[in-house]
Length: 198
Image 1 (tube, rainbow, N blue to C red):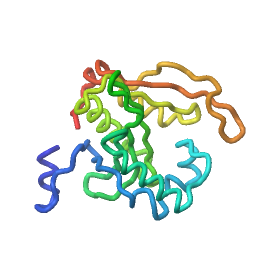
Image 2 (cartoon, rainbow, N blue to C red):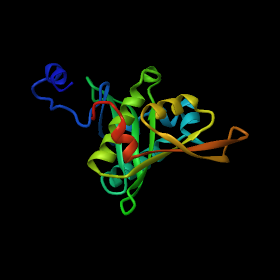
Image 3 (tube, one colour):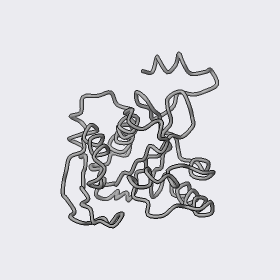
Image 4 (spheres, rainbow, N blue to C red):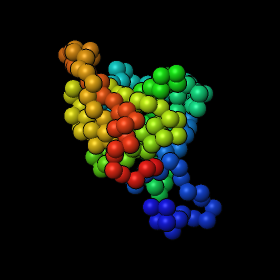
């Protein structure tokens, strides 16, 4: 993979890190959240992400400032980009970092609809897990998935997540109470995965 990247990268563009087979992660920037970013305005994306109401331009700007100001301290927020581009197609964030116990929560969205269903989210999650469990030396990364998001659940399982608990009727959405599944990857799970590290 490194040799392939070297062949396709221009001399003035460094090799991206962390990178997977399909995507690479860069620090999120203001431009990724403002200017009509679809993940905060699109009905279907918001449905699976759990966004209750659309962001206005001012709200998106405030959210972007908060994310950027906390990067590297309280959380790590990365824009997901295809290997041959630096345009964001989504976001993956490591948050609620508990350094004492080695735990953190992850959230992910592939906002660009044309990029959904191609394995890019799984590849991005693998990159994030390699960063969290490798570079940051965390012990456990967890997430919550809504019972109406079966595609996301399958993707998480491919990245090594296992079910820990079902939080019954924990999510009220579109007039119905839904179950929320708590899933996690611990260091031993990650070490057993037979794949190239980001």
